[in-house]
Length: 384
Length: 93
Image (cartoon, rainbow over all chains, first blue to last red; front, side, top):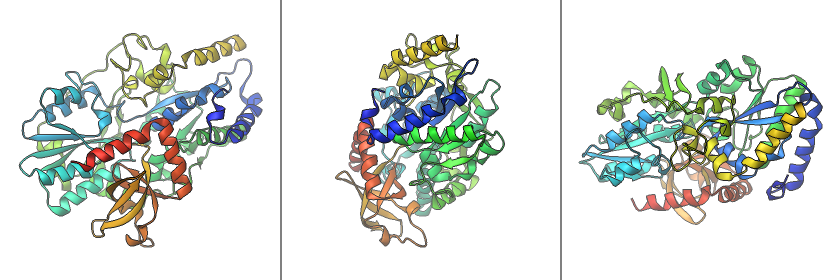
């Protein structure tokens, strides 16, 4: 528990850990496999590693780091599409900084910029719209990225562009959806997750109800969780209480930010501008039904995919990558054949090594592998 | 992008477009406040509110204590510095 003292309220952390340890007899013992709890969101993964949350937990709890890092799961073919759009001489291609380094099969956006493409980092889609107004003879494309958390911002920007009649602005839309992706993980045949920490800020937009199916249909407990280390410990405790009671409910640990109905103006904007795609391609997970959105016909003139010809080639993940298995919790990051050898944060091969919020990069960078390996070894010895 | 950053709304720039200035750790920038405005809370009533800002949009009202705790967390995670730098850079676009 070497990190507990870094918590804002170490006493509360200790009492939560005591409570967690207090129910170990329900979950620990001969022949029992560790509980697997998935945190879906990359923000949670970041907190878990920064504060060493996993090392504090008893051996019978294993955290599975989910696919909730939009930069990590962007398929190589989409990055290639970005590069080909950015290389058009009439285009100013705008993107969040996080997406600059994601490797494509030819080059990243950063390399495209170095080679002369007009690629600009922006903080907000509003900045891209401002650039479009300032450069009426150029086409400004905004690389729209992220889960439901950032969807209202791009939708509202399109609505504003439409209201102002700005025509040299478009989105390359790569927004992805949380709920269909959780469903795909639950439907996967090798899945053995026992519960979920649901993403706090996605829930701030969509509310609690979209997660009902996890509790009702799949009978897995799910707790909407904040980003403080104490939030995460408390949510794990709430999940354990559900498991001890034999319940599966949607609970909201992050009610201070997440209203149960979500954000109405945000949801309205999303519904006006976007519709579900039949499927969307993910790095590491392959194609998932309804897991992305595209721009509705009414706003087709703001859709870079329709305005320009985008190659939209499917580039397979490298064969040696086992990101899919790591994402589903069937193997741990360091058990992947290329972890730390052919695949490192400097030269990432797989999705999860790309961004600091990816599980593999987090394991690699935070260097707590020894402690986690020791935890795994002692578990094996204990259960042998 | 996903964690957002807390700031305080200091004035309304354009009530029609729902644009307001937010102060994030001393850095001021114009953000869209459409998602924190409704029938019971007008644009003008937002001045003084603490909000969680995601990519230039205020997405949720928070109390001041929560805002400070979140800012501290983001600093520890190394995310606040990056976010504020991106905000500053975008002001020069």
